[in-house]
Image (cartoon, rainbow, N blue to C red; front, side):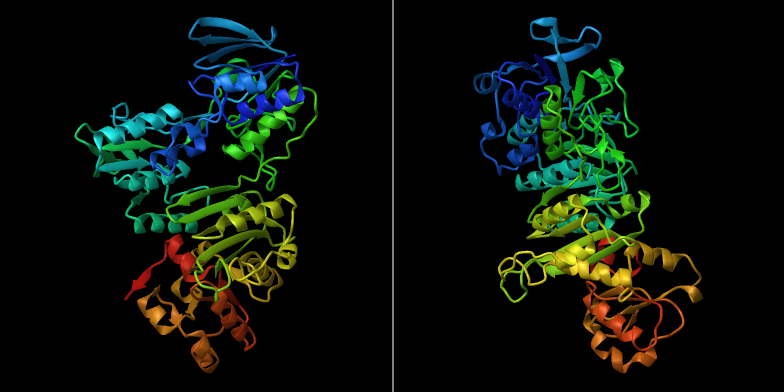
Length: 554
């Protein structure tokens, strides 16, 4: 049995190791275009930041190591250039020229290729991308030799954020430029705002809504609006496209999302060819839609499943949630499942609950605030997605909610789930429990919620006389420091004695800093005759982070 694998990182390397564990007699060969196989590409930014000191730590296997441990032949610096599907062979070009390699089962794991816009100056020696070990080496050597004072990063996704921290740790004044209105577009807008604020508090400049225009030999970067920035070095990280040249040439079916089409067994439109990793489209397991999810975790699991099926062991892939996490200096942002926008596009009746709580019991020293957002279907109470930002405990909550999503749990389940508790680790009601309480109060009508984008639509969709009234129930000093324009301020502790100051008859939207005091105020109002009252979920924290409001500063 001849197993040929094209691509030796993540999915490809995992497929090779799995194939050997299944069959000791199979003839297994990996073809890898680059000089390295099975390296930790997610760790590359941390070598540049010097959090990882030893380069060798990133090289998980070598061709010689694969051969000695697994009996797998690895051909590095060898490119697959043609698939002869009828003859079941692949033409490759390596250091010794071209040759044909035969296969009984072929696994494609070619990943993706970073996008490089066609702009003036992007071929300069001070312009980089970060995708491979040689890319990492080039950046590290440039920083060591040139000691650049400034850097511009084009792109505010995972790599852009990680490299902003890496450059900052190397003493480089860094600016992140993002063409979209916010950073980290795979999360909802308020989390992009929180991430931007974190970067700026750590000395990184953030510019959104503007893109890269050109790189000049003078050491300046021109932006799409014509402005210029100092940029002794430039990193371009504006997206990744799936590597589909070989598959297209061979006539394999491409999916609607732009990735290689595979079935539940990771089999392509050719019965003898499987695929895994960033190049394929998969099922988004909450929405049921076909999407691309270019993440290392799914790629590794897909490689394992592809190898199993290629060797006759039937194994289905049920899809991916897209769970992800990124370190931003001393903070963490993470998400799983659908965003609010994606959930609406998938046709759900979307509810959103945002809570801000210390990551452990408030009376125990060292608590750090955690902002957690859960999305749910208002008809079924089914969990649809979750996002979080904070300094501690973020990934713990998101991983727990990823398990809940996989099990198709509801808010009722999350409200009752028995999570571990001791004061140094959590509260008696964990933020997950509390978010579920908030969501259930919304669904039942006990304490209806309204999201920040919905508030903005309501404020902008009618004349002044028909706009909802905003009631700010924070303390006077909080209100005086900063508030949404035209909001009426009555602190929650005074509300019972000042009800005559609150107009009746229209929609009343209550907010506080994070949502709890607004919930208390809403219950007071509803029990005193106010019919249409809603709590702006996530409160002023979320409104400021989201942006788009007319804010009055003291």
